[in-house]
Length: 162
Image (cartoon, rainbow, N blue to C red; front, side, top):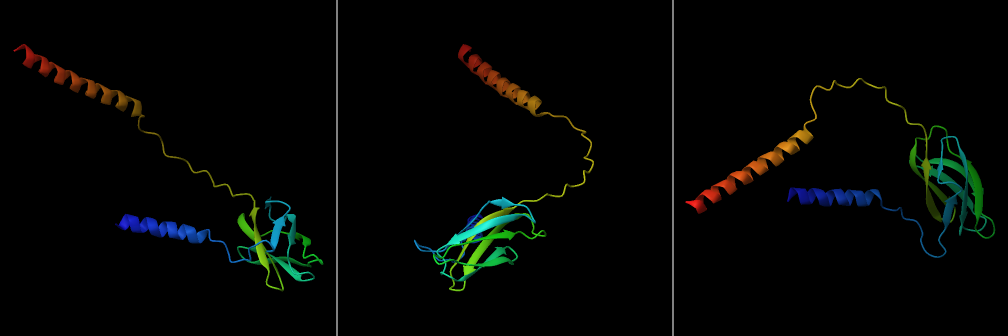
């Protein structure tokens, strides 16, 4: 019972972890995109969007720890394009670029910030003091099974002969 409850809680937590933020959806919903799906800290990319309010100021923010990347103005058809630079202290990992205008239209896209992972200092491993007995154990198990079969067969033959 406890295991089932723990499984339900774990699945629920995973569902909440991947829940989408509440943004406008539909055929005329604002959309945003990036010129690349991954960039390194300090790198630049072009963020584009459409279906925003014509002439509205659009703010582009990098989320995990919110950092404003820039602002621009949507043209008369509600589209924008702006080149932004990812801060050099941004942690590697999956982030969201969120674009929002003064009318409350907001949307996001994913961005993978790639970087170097520090290499761990190699620690000496323990000495190998055992033996790999997996193959030998398998042969032994087969021998025991065959021996058991021979004993049972021998007992059955004695009963029939006498």
